[in-house]
Amino acid sequence: MGRPPCCDKVGVKKGPWTPEEDILLVTYIQEHGPGNWRAVPTNTGLLRCSKSCRLRWTNYLRPGIKRGNFTDHEEKMIIHLQALLGNRWAAIASYLPQRTDNDIKNYWNTHLKKKLKKLQLGSECEGYDRDRILSSEATSRGQWEKRLQTDIHMAKQALCEALSIEKPEATISITCETKPKPTTTQPYTYASSTENIAQLLHGFMRRNSPKPTTPKHNSLSSAASSEGTSTTPGTTTSTTAPHNDNAIDLSEAFESLFGFESFESSNSDSSQPLSPDASLFQGESKPDINAQLPLSLLEKWLFDEGGCGGDVSAAAQEHADLADMTLDENPDLF
DNA sequence: AACCCCATCAACCGCAACTTG
DNA sequence: TCAAGTTGCGGTTGATGGGGT
Image 1 (cartoon, rainbow, N blue to C red):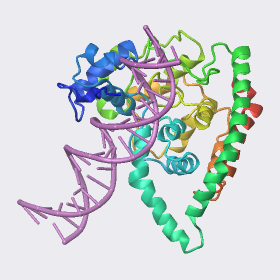
Image 2 (spheres, rainbow, N blue to C red):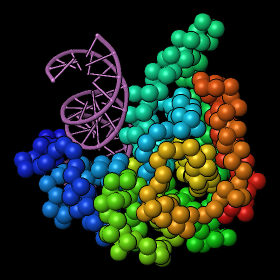
Image 3 (tube, rainbow, N blue to C red):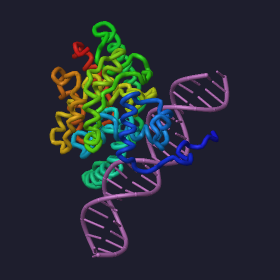
Image 4 (cartoon, rainbow, N blue to C red):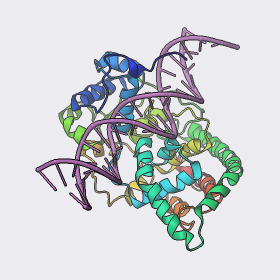
């Protein structure tokens, strides 16, 4: 279509964002919520294109983002998920809600690719050939996707039932619809996860954020505000992604079932403590699922396969089974 | 000290999917 | 149904900083 990219317009600023611009953007989103990006530059006076604003928000300013070193656990998850899903970074990121797709993509390209290459070189001597495994992955993918789809369907049904019967105001981010509609009217509490912005906005956040969120609408958005990452309307995480994508749908289930504090618990070595504001945000009304659900299920799935590049179809099977299992074994979660 | 090379990551770009009128 | 507008995604680029020579 002949339409020129918005960023080609004259007077549109490019390049790194300044703290002032960040403040403008955060302030605006604080008031209006993310979404309607087209209007953001006009309403904020930012000389940025809408795309740039959205990107800045989703990749940097959005609450709940963890920055800094990836833990072993995250690394393994990424490797595993990449083998499973390919370069679908948004889908992968949905399993690691504290990381952005951009972050994961960068990490993959800069660290993990090399690491795996090394690994492959090393293991080829021992008769281990990742390429072979990866090619078999292609053929098995069709099979496991079918199975996955069935499992997801069942999981969703169970969730829908559980949600409608037991807890109309449930704080789970899963949805019974295929396309959750982003809302922009919901009250948000924002606390940037990035240290600089957290500091920058310290006074701002004290003034504005710790108002208890009173969810206007049901499960989706209440979880959104408490989770802080996954269900922010208009963000890149897959809970709102318009994909008809198995993995993504399943990830919703995963996210809602496990919460991702559990990963945090394994990230205790993280050298990047959350800012006070961020932790304030993250701790806010987050359902304490860990207490009820054993992490070992997920960890088992991750680590029981004898390292990266294991049998992916089996992994997917377990992956799907896990969702089922969780539903079967933990109905009281809902 | 100056230069080069490389790694990292924020940001951009183009395309596709989705939404809306 | 279709075209225009909007949003999301993945690939790529470019600025920056650190390390080596």
